[in-house]
Length: 533
Image (cartoon, rainbow, N blue to C red):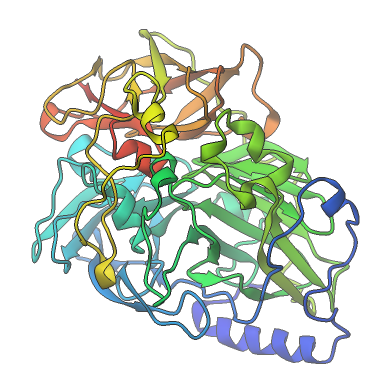
């Protein structure tokens, strides 16, 4: 089986480009097939530009010391990024790139991650999806002051997965993520090789981080500049790995896309513009038992999915990944204030330009892993996700009033938006840094029943563990949701039953969080704390 190291990646890309130059490509902006795209009510606004290549974040594999510990270095610092062609936008980032390096962490390998804060304000760094003790989780209690360095030391024993990292300071997560602070973390083991899955980074195994942003007239990031933004910050520029609607040169063969919805609030409905089928092989925190064929997939903020797409017969073609939002997203909301034109229609994300085959010998396995399972032996807990009605905030917005944003506290004078207010709640309670809401016994396997009693869907996330969806609306979850997960989208009026085992301790000083992952909701009350002991 052919493998390609990181030094050979540039040579491979040059070969693909040469092959594409000699191929009969579709003219720019023209799509093959799927005449029903518009008929589905998902008319695309501003068809993709596809003028710049997809950036592939650098891989960070760490430095191994004499004691067998692998060390990684991350620095949060200000800079500029060309998110939109020809516009230099002030941003924050890790290690100088809009999307920080992809951390490659071997399963069962002790690691130490050294995080330096080069910003002018406090931050934290949360390892989203990592099963680590509360002291290493990077939640709101693990504050890194300007100029200081924090070290997280842990060993990941969970299955191979696509995780990510982002700041998590109390009431400031939304603006700091919006400013550009995020990156991927991949847990690696030998499963990919054993299954023959595409696994050559940047060639047939691509990181795809999707975000939406809004820019002002000067090209600066504009955060929470409208009254309705408190319902969830959405933008009109669609970025993949920090570039607006890029293209990727890929080989005719099986392609693996590791997709992260890194948006603050926008739900995506992934689909290919020609209607082609793809195969879901993994969710947030692990592989499925078997590939699941689909032609569209709803992906909430902070959710991850791994898909395989068959490009073996597409040499010389251009294949567009888009969000067919209008087919699904409007039904997630019972209040029009939370839906914009892009939710009602759709938008392009990434163009795949298919070159010659590389004969890497990868494919689509019939089976992946044994079906994950958990049997509860602990408490059953109930969580109600409350909207803005109880606080009177929704009536305030309906009356045409907004909330005054905080002072400029971001790159290029970006507003820090609205945060620290009691607007959204869980179980009728707002986030209180001094209150522990739930006490869990170490080693227990519990059932968490999450019911959404609000007017809009909320992505629910818990720290420190992965869960299985036991039931959705009283029924068995669909096949694509039967992997290990750490985020679940809960629709209005729906109850989702989760089962999770709590194997790591978390004291009150470094409690775990559970919260809505619409960041503007999290920053305004929709979060609670739990300890494990």
